[in-house]
Image (cartoon, rainbow, N blue to C red; front, top):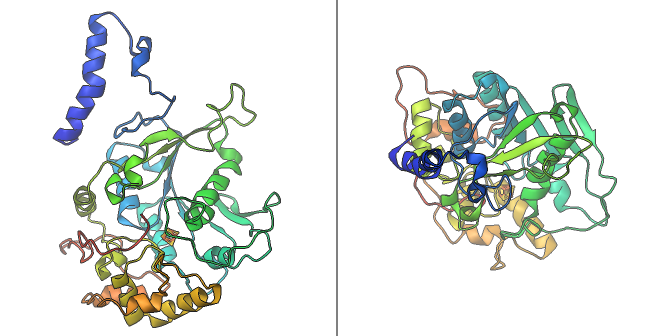
Length: 375
Ligand code: SF4
């Protein structure tokens, strides 16, 4: 624990407990120490890790890697950790529409290197299938489990039409990709599996407050939406699930330090100059990233622009298509040939950890401030 963290810990935990002992009180006797809403903590950088299972939502970006390392550094047994990866494009189409082609295989190879199980789940037909919904129901969810992939129908869903990209907004209703392709899928993966019943589950995600004013307001620890034990006195399916954001309080510098100490190779998008590793064609990309994609992977930009024209609604609020935005900026100059080759491939072929005898290098995208990825 660094000095700032240990001071916070002393102020909130050690000193109050010591003062209570002076008066012969136990922590449970002090009502004021309880959070306003049970189980909800705005700051919770260190918690008691008495969980049966920790699910790490692994996007393949630096912050989810740091969240995993944070847990391991605090002694949580690796044997009780599982990695979950939500496939934004689904698995049905041969080519990527939004995500990096290699990101799925990167997560597979990462899990192999760490000797941890990886479960993939997705909305059938992914981002494009949801975007093209036209007077029709949402597709089923597919959930990876220890017994194989389970298909879960959406019988309660109403027929609806999207025919537009998610809009750049904090609201998950208009920025529907995060909710439809990640949050809902993760929720369903928890509720459809009996193995989580009567278990204490820690659901870990890698957001950081420094990333945006929206994330700055997030709680660090709270009951997950699938938790039943705090919703009902006698739940039919008792399931204790806490959502924890262990790196919420960390700076970008602290995250890179963790990855350097771990000697994990910086993920490819940062090596290319991206400031974040989200979808390659994320709706939050800035003009410079669109210019870079148009330069190196023009077919990706063209496909998105064609849909913008077909829908009559651009991703950008200013109405410019991604092709028009790409013309407004200079592309990034990518010197990392290895990363550039990897960026177009489906199979991930680079080492997960920096090999013995080689030094760890801060990637071009670190601290770049280049606008890429979700906020
Ligand atoms: S990374 Fe961007 S495009 Fe992909 S799901 Fe998140 S907000 Fe949507």
